[in-house]
Every structure is written in C-alpha cells, then in structure tokens.
Length: 152
Image (cartoon, rainbow, N blue to C red; front, side):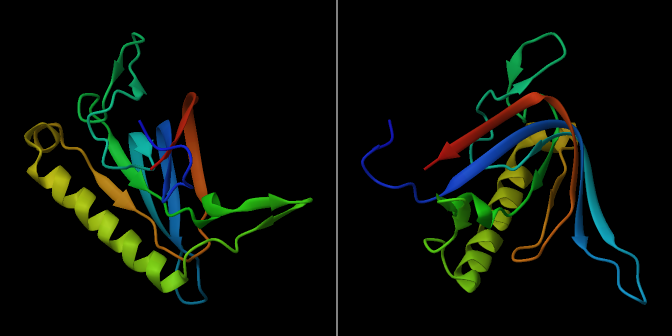
C-alpha cells in the first residue's frame, strides 16, 4: 500500500478506448500534421502491464497483454497542476528538460518491456507515443468512460 502521507512522485492516467489518434506535429506551411493512431487501446500506460484494467465485450477484466490491445503514451504535465482559486497553477511540476528526459526513459522502458513479452509479440501489441512539451490534439473513442488515475 502506498504511503498516503507523502505527495505522489508521479501520476499515470489510464483510459481504455476503442480508438485513439494523437497529433504529434502540427501542420506547417510546407507539411501536413503528423498523427499516431491505435485501436483497442489503453491510452496512457505504466509499468502495470499485467494489471486487469481493461474490460472485454463479455464484461471480464483483463490486462492489456491479455486483451490484446495497443498502447498510446501521452505526456501529461498538466496532471501536476493544483487549483488555486479559479485558476490552475503548475509551480510544483518538474523542469521541462528533466520531464523530457524522464518521459524518454519511460517510453524506452515500455518499448523494452513489450519487446521481451512473448504474449505481446504474438498478439502484435503496438506502442505509440506523443512528444513531450508540445501541445497535442487527442481524439479518443472511449469504451466507458473507463479511466484510472494511479499515483506512485
């Protein structure tokens, strides 16, 4: 059980979805926008590959490995915000360069974990991710809503 007396070090927001599309690069005068897409996915992700968070069509809860599904990692610096009056403040967030490095390490660890998981390889699980520190457009068809926020 987590120690509730300490502030969380990190938060992960997990959203089960039928389809998700994330714009990772906005359109420019000489190029179109770039998007990543996944179907039957868990948008977010953490090291809890085997936790039963996803619901199947028959109502059974399974892990993303058992579903199978894909994974879309979306950086969410705004999860560190605190409400002050009628505005959000982000003074306690980490510095952007540190956040970018941690996000990069997180994506790499997730890719390595999926690459070594035989069930994921057999099922063709796909991992895609957004870019840290950029405004991104997210389009999601949810299966629920079915959302979990995990603090650790």
